[in-house]
Length: 417
Image (cartoon, rainbow, N blue to C red; front, side, top):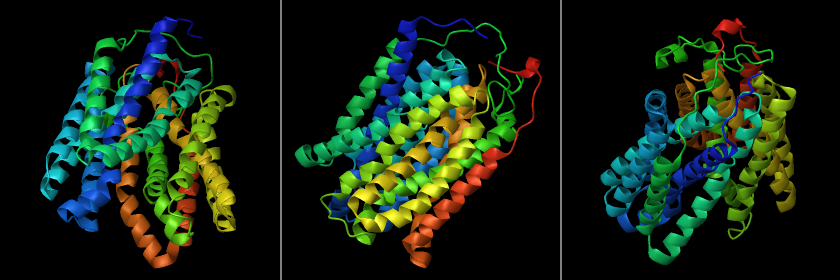
């Protein structure tokens, strides 16, 4: 077992700064959804145009994952996160300073590209300071950043819109993102260099450090069956997650008839359940599935399929039953979501390719996010909301099957820890 460990103070600094950084990235993501109605009213933007702006952002975000992942393993996490956050702050401010549909598209596309630096950079930083035997617990706790960050960013954007106008929905967050980016650039500890060692747990190609040391290119990583399995499963999960994040309030009001005043609070059930799922599933992966996180991922995605079916039965019964059912869906989704994109990607990337593996997995998953609008609108138009949830059930079951496929064992000499 590798016994070397960084100073606790440095490890705490890495955890705290990267948690804050990824939460702060969300300040630049939530402004546009909150300001959509106001932008539509002021500038005559149609729903189609608003959707095009979303799609441009998601496309740039997906492609940017591959680019920033490749860059991050060369320049290091501190520079990657600092540069990415300053770029995202500039793009966010540019959005607030403009006033035409084309300019909005260009600014939000640029924002999506710089936002894509966040996951490869922060996951790389965490992977450098938390070893394979405890990173499930560490990443489970750390991954609450994007649930808490999303909730806080929505509140900030709403406050800015109400008290300062739509432009400050973008100017205010831009200042916050820039401040955190500068703090990361100044104070995030550089990657430590651990000793060569081999873990004392049994691993397969979905477990700790199984990418060959020679896998130095993004293309080589894209050809890895283990990485592709994670990416395919994450595609399914992100399609479900983004559909629920973008459309759950609409569903609660229009389909279930809940009061408009309660809908924002009821929709929080999804992310509140997700916080518990991230923490519990991450810790469980360390204790019961050392070296084989894909197995608990398969179990949890299968449970997600069951939770979605159960929600269809609970949602019509009332507010309390629906809230509990959606919280269970969030628990079963965010658990494997954070595991796949975090600890499992770190396991596969080892010392040499953490940012690239995280970028590829998240980039492939983000393709599902791009499709969420068309899938949601198209399926509900054809088969209704129950039909959409059945599609989610099928996607969760597919993710479970993909994760259950065993990987090829590699000799110890090819493992990277």
